[in-house]
Length: 425
Image (cartoon, rainbow, N blue to C red):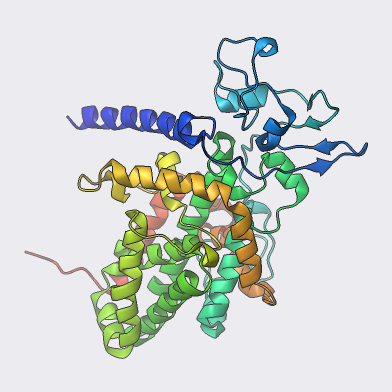
């Protein structure tokens, strides 16, 4: 029965993925009324602008349909990218494109690049905080990390995290060359496209790694309950700053994930001390942050656009890259009482994210205006640094599933050492 259930889940997953890309594609009937994405026009050496695929309709590029000769097709104005529906998959079509395609008015465009290699390179990462080669959870590095975090106020930490998050997500510091390779102007739009898979995987990697690092900070604090409770209080304050001050829902979700991990949530003595010594932090976590996170996941809460630098894309990442989402049955839409409404909400939100990439960029620039980052502190929140810290210079190159499985055991061992589980007879 278990094997049959697993097979059924896999079939449903495959159908879900096919449906998701059909729904998200603005070429679909659902998206016919949506406005076209912002164009990414650039001049080449001969003063001929390079136009992004998302702006092709301005050049009357014919929209090629399945089993139809491109030379006889008619323009319907709905062309979105050169990823025409056809016998090949979107990615296959991209990989088959060979060189720039010219348009009749002398302009030309280049097909977007299908990325297949992660932007994270932990084995090549060089840092003043760690040697060229290091072991997992090296004591000296951990000690320096804790010192830097102890000196850092929550708002400054939230700004450093937001800066790093927005750079990985291609919300900030996106050069014209990168835009040309993506075929769109923002990472928020790339997330919704088939050739944005590597960016989705990178963001899932960053989410898991960030959450794990914060969990290690708590579980590696082998002092008194008061010391751990103080650290919990600071992490809660960082989560609040990410949510309210910075409008960074991605960073907020990662920090909340750390606090909700079973190995951290089971520390009853530590949480009891938090409620006694830092009552306001405990109330903030229990009455505001946790309910807000739950509402975001269930699609019952939205963030004001004017304040958002990085929207809540985690549900979309989990839907499109289910196998990389960190466990089976962990998303709220997998529960019977939630149903398909939550999935439809997040799909609709994803299409909105794709259209508003420029606004998120402007918001992030405004939030970080005048911000003087500290190089060592920013390193703490870089994924390459965190991967090296957690898995070492060699382990960071192992397959993701193996790395997470091993570290889950490490977190459990650390948690049990702090508060041994109660034995029942």
